[in-house]
Image 1: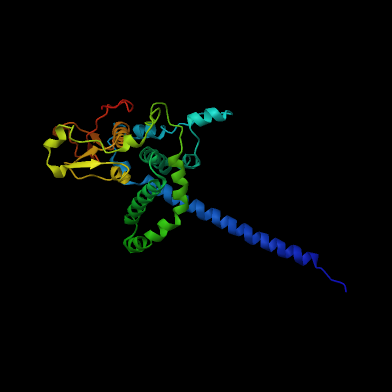
Image 2: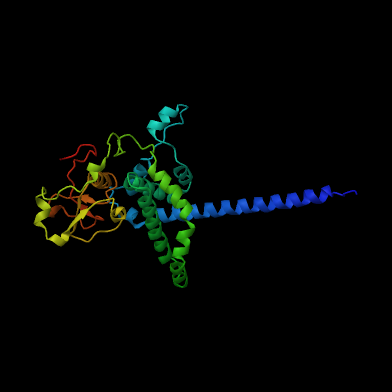
Length: 287
């Protein structure tokens, strides 16, 4: 019995199958790129970026913050790359995106400072909350008939972005090539004793304030707090070495909050006021 094999038909079916697979891959790639752009835009319009008390001219100050991520020319030495920090694909993708890319880069650097020493789950939750704030803000700028639908779809949209959140979490957890002097964790080792709550009874000034104005703060409990305006007249009191380090960095370089040592120092324009027990070079700690 002879079997007739239609080679042409088989090849045609193979070509169709390959085309289907290729189309599916192209569509998945398009969806990934779309998800990344949504996240980048959400990062770029986060309200915290418009509340940095930067010295004028504002654009020049923004460019300086953008330049904190400073990868050196590629080296063939893996050892040099290990100690200087790894180039990152998200920063590379943000670079050509104009204003959105600049602002998202500045926000991502701040998220790296806040989240680098935290647990993976806390970092992913931080990214999700930040992007949710940006997406909600974007929704308020849409026509009124669209806003309700966007609010309804927020949970669905956030769920679609999870793969980007996971990728950004990896960025935040790895060592990045920051400009010399801007990495607050350089040369500092954290251990369990660093993160035990530090006693507040050694502080004199804040205890003259009403109790409701004093907010003991540990960044491990609520890292997102630094990205929201704290009630006027309140003062954050860092409870751990890591919290002090991050708060001090955010006040020194981003002017997001203000370090105060007396009631007269309060700044109503600052996102928050905090009382640190460290000096402002980011490396020497007051015990």
